[in-house]
Length: 218
Image (cartoon, rainbow, N blue to C red; front, side, top):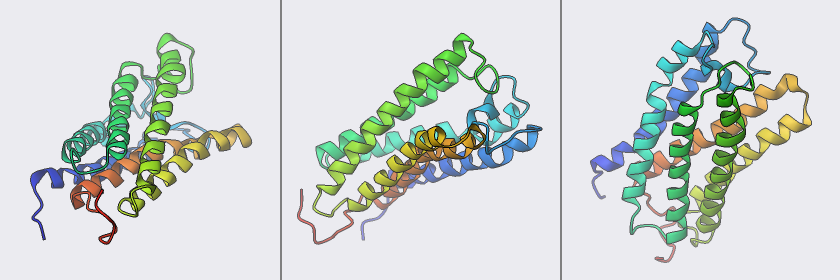
C-alpha cells in the first residue's frame, strides 16, 4: 500500500470545512433572537447588522480557508492522474469556491434579507448567479466524465449528482412552497457545495484511487 503524503492529509481539511460551516449554521442562530431557520436564509446570520455575525465569524473561520487549501491541493494532486474532463470539472469547482469566497466577502448583506443597497444587489443578483452557474457547470462536467470513466470514478460522479440534485432542489422548493419554508430549501443549495468539497477532500485523502480496480486504465 502506497504511503500517504502530506498532500493526502490536506484532504481532511475539506471535512473540517464542512464541519465548520455546519457548526455555524446550527449554533449561530443562538445569538440571533427571533431567527426562523425555516423561513430565513443562512446568509442572514452573517449580515452586517446581524446580532449573530460575531459568533458566525468565529464558527465559520476555518470554513473558507480550509475549503480553498483543500481544493487547491486537490488540483495539484490530480495533475496527470485523472482524465482531462474530470480534472477540468474539479478545477472549475475550485474556481467557483474562489469566486464565492471573494465575492461574498466583498459584498456581504447589509441587512438580514435584501435591503436593496448596492452590496445587497451585488450579493443577490451578481455573485450568487455567477456562483450557481459555475457550480452547475463544474458538477455536470464531473458527472459526465465520471460516469464515462468505465467505473473508475463512478462514486465521484454519483456524489456530484447528489450535490447537483440538492442544488436544484433549493430553487424548485423555494418556488413551489410558501415563503415560510424558504430557509429549508435554501439549505439544500448551500450544503451542496460544502458537502461536495468534503467529498473531494476524502478522495484526496484516498489518493483519488479508482473505485473499480478492474477498470481499464484511461
